Structures are given as C-alpha cells and as structure tokens.
Image 1 (tube, rainbow, N blue to C red):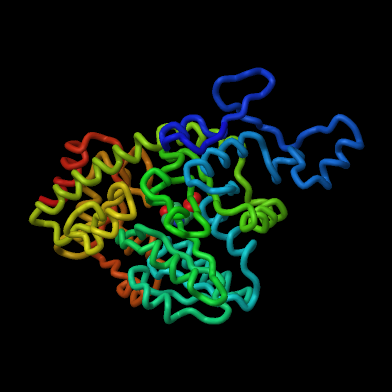
Image 2 (image 1 turned 90 degrees about the vertical axis):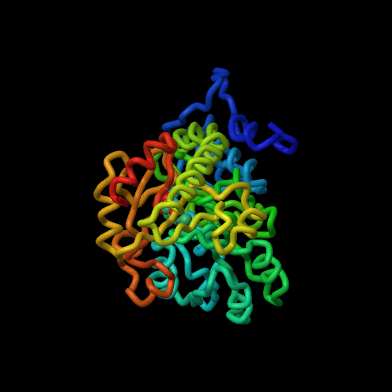
Length: 392
Ligand SMILES: *Cc1c(COP(=O)(O)O)cnc(C)c1O
C-alpha cells in the first residue's frame, strides 16, 4: 500500500499489511524460526542478495516486517527496524552508529535505564557522554565537541514532563561542523501526537511496550530513520540478536490499530485529572504539558497535538504523604509501567529513580513528594475517587 496520502488513523489500521497466498484479512502471525529455500542455488542466492527476503527470524520475519512498515508509515520514516524492547532500540542505535572515541550529548531527563546504559556501558567502550538540561538549548551548544556524534533526548521527559524543543536542537545539530545526529525517544507521545522527523530529528526511537501496544501485554521497540542510517543499526541487530519476536510484533500490530483513539482518550482523561488535581488543597504542584501552568505549555502545544497521558504531581508532606496517596488506591495499579489502558501510579524517587544518587535526583527535580500517573482509559470519576481517598 502506498502510504503518502492517508491520514494517521488510516495508516494505523492499514499500513504494512501484507497477505499470504491464503488471502487472510488480518495480519498473520508467522511463528517460525527459519524459512526454507526451494534449492541449494536459491539458498545461496539469498545469502548474498541485497534484499534477501526471509532466511531466519533473527534477521527478518514477515509479521515483524508488517509492524515495521506500519510504524514507519506513522512516523513518516524511510525505514523502521524493530527491536526486542525499547532499551534494545537505544542500544542498537548506539552500537550501530557510534564507535570508541565518540561523544554523546544527552538530556539529563531521560528514562533511568537509558542513563545507566550511557553511564555504565557506553563509557566502558570509550564513548563519552555529557548530560545537559533538556530544556536549555544553550547548554547543548556549549557541550558540543569536535567528536560529538549524537544528540539524544526524550520529550516530554519522565517523570517531570519537561519539554525539549526538538526543532531548535535539530537546528543546532545541523549547524555543527561535524553534524551530530539527533535521536528522539518518542515513547510518551507516539506518532499520533508528535512527529520528531518532521521537526528535524534524524532518528526516532520507541519503546513499543508502552502506547504502541497500549495494553501492557508485551515488550518491543523500534528505531526509525533514513535507509542509510538504519543499515548499520539493522546490521548490529541481525548479528547480535535483540530483534522483535513475531508473536510480540503481532500483538503490537493489533494494538496500533486503536492508537489514535487511545491517544486521544488518554490525553482527554489526563487533562481532566490534571485540572482536578490542581484544585486539590493537598496537592502542591501539578506538571502536565496540557495545563497553562506548565512552564513550557506553549512549546508543548506547538510540538505535540495534546498534553499526552502522563501527569506528575507533588503532594504536600513529602514521602509519607505521597505513599499515603499510593497506598489508598484500590483501582489504580502500583507499577512503574505506563502507556496502558489501566491507570498506573508510581513514586519515582523510590522506584524508577531510586538507583540515581540523591544529589543527582534532586538536581533532576525528582522530589520525595512527586507522584507520576500514567492515566488510563477508566472513567475519570473513578480515577479521581481513587486518588481522592489518599489526598483527603
Ligand atoms: C519504557 C521506556 C523505555 C524502555 O523501553 P523497554 O521497552 O522497557 O525496554 C525507553 N524510553 C522511555 C521513555 C520509556 O518510557
């Protein structure tokens, strides 16, 4: 299917679908580790071909290809390579595109495992990383060195929903002599709310575990960009093996069909919850990009279609008060996951960000009073009632 002129909701349902000889209407799940050839000559030809078709599911698999083509259509990318998880998407990007002696500039407000990957593993292989404020382009500019090869950011950030100006940071990358690449982790928005490639990014990264699947069933990830950039990323994946399983690809494909509906519903619920939280006397501060009180509300509304589904808020009374809110919920799930139909609630300081040194955590603005909710698709009134118990 040519994808050029279709709207996002059409692409979410239709893009990437390939039918087998049986003419099945929905996407088939190809649970096979390898593919047979008709003859020795055909097998030999496949192994040296530029576009070899299907050989082995560590390389490619038809169900995985359907997922890749659908996500590529949604993000407006030339190519997508699927990975086993969001973290393996970030690893594959670094392994494919960086080498010892290279320098990375990354936003300080990144997913915890991404920070650990950069600090504990990239450094071990001689790749230097400088962390800067995601919201201050001047810090990115002053951190640039002759060997800077990659800019890496996530927006809105986790858990504070800070907004990085993708277009401004992309313009900076393009103005540098040795042209670093800009990679954006688009997990919080999905292509329904934000299209980083259109804003000038070179690479988009996804944890498909979150909104793309959207129902908390499987892990998956993806890296998207030009064919030229994706070739070494795919080369690493095919060799090292953190590729997406066809079963997970099938589950995520099915999830993506409702992506637009879900993102709209998550956003509407999150806005209603954020507005309500702002009125609660026990709440000190609400951070939600869709609220006019958010420090970067204007930029967020230029860059994203809505504020998204993640709300962070601080309660009055520190850790005890925050834990009281969490422990008084009966409906919400106490789990660090997000991007699920079921609302999740977490205390970042003692869970997702517990391994970060207290000083670094404080510098990142993650206080003991902070709670993050991944707003799901339950009725707003039920979510409010569940939170109200611990806030009263
Ligand atoms: C969850 C998450 C990841 C990691 O994804 P996994 O699928 O858990 O490996 C990366 N970035 C962000 C923003 C995330 O929320």
